[in-house]
Image 1: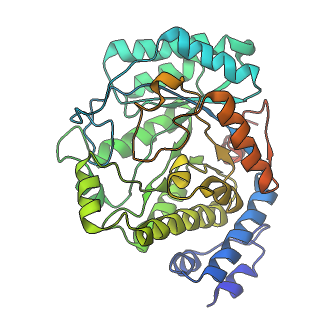
Image 2: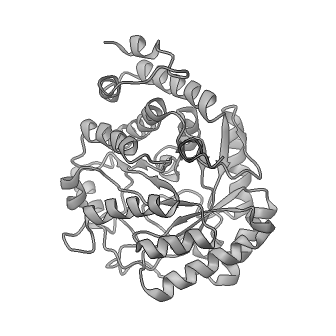
Length: 372
């Protein structure tokens, strides 16, 4: 088995990548082989989801969180983080800005809370945003683990997509990067993903790539998890250190943030995008800001390796620097207009176009459900 033999298959058409081939390609490190994999993944993207980048204007509306994940900069016990809640009028204003600037969709993201007041607030916020443009602005939610009833209320209010990252499908590794308590349960995360499917969301998940202790076999299993859970959209990126977290301090002590370590993680991140595209074909895949945190051209490379979703930040400037899940987050000093112009140039630089005014719903979801 060789890379060229595998890539001679008509993967952009009817041929499928086998698990054995997926495993073989995951272990490739030769740059010429990787470039060939990225090129083939772009061909699969062009045939199955088109060379269009869909924007999800990202509104980070609160960094208050009840969770204490060991990798996250807004974890509950990080007392160096300045907490904030964006004013409701500002959230609506930025959603209106997204609509006026021809974004087809927004993402509402916050730290995790599960109290009734928070869920009620979010549901009403979704309803208010759906009044913009006669309901045409798509809404992706990213507010963590909730009850099935809370998910159902969000769908009924008008949200259509939900991103809940598994972070890793290796249970032992999951339990290493989260506190060992009932609030941070691998089984609960899986149950929430299943609940999202039951209530009718287009379901998104993803992993951190290049975690300490993670193997290439773990990454193969992550892609198989996406398949087995019938996931509609993938939001994954390289692990980026936050220095004020337990995992970040451990990683820094291990030397993971050396230039060599960063190069390995960006390579793994791009390889995961490409192999997920080759293996699953019609899912939505994001080129995340974490790619750009490690490589100035990371998001362009992600698109060229098969990604088709971008999440430009439209959080108001006064709060951008407070929503730091990891160090060196791009675009924290920019405003929404600057982010839009910069990102659009990046999209055009690789020959893709922006799907203005388009929701960019998952074709995988549409085929599976007959929804569109």
